[in-house]
Amino acid sequence: MAWSDEIIPDLRARLGDDGATLRFTDAQLRVLWLSAGRQVISDCYGVDFVNTYVISLLSATITPDPTVAGTVDPDYMTLTTLKAACIANQGAATKGAGQAIAIGSSGGDRIDLRDTAKARTALLKTGACQEYIDAKTRFLLENQGQNRLGIGVSTAVRAY
Image (cartoon, rainbow, N blue to C red):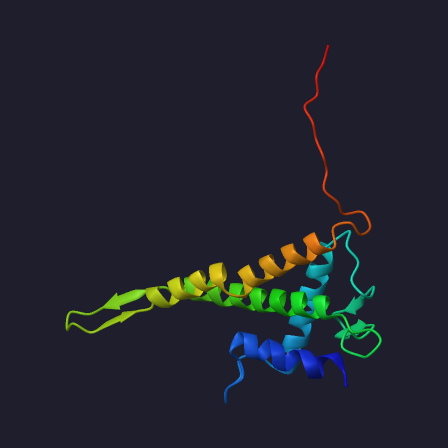
């Protein structure tokens, strides 16, 4: 089973994109997940995952496959899926903000899309973006003694 066979359904579920009409193609979600994976590696610089990944957006591949026995990397898969959902939600919020309009007519009919934009923006504070920040923080704290990452100690400098 390829990584996308396991990851794409999970990502679709997080995005609420698992109904009869899909917002994203599988190819779009693969590229989104791989792009998020690059950002996760950068965000967690100094802490090793189970594997060292080579990611190609052009060919939509990741090596080694983080879902295959022997190279399974649950931390990387979870962080990357949360980051991908966050990126998608940020895109939806940006699009929604551009559509935040209210139109009224003299006949009393009214179209108001401002609350939709507010709801999408609020989702960024409590949804996948916050879940990603929380999960990344836990991962970094749990692995802080590894490699170059650590807690620095600073003291006041006194000049004579």
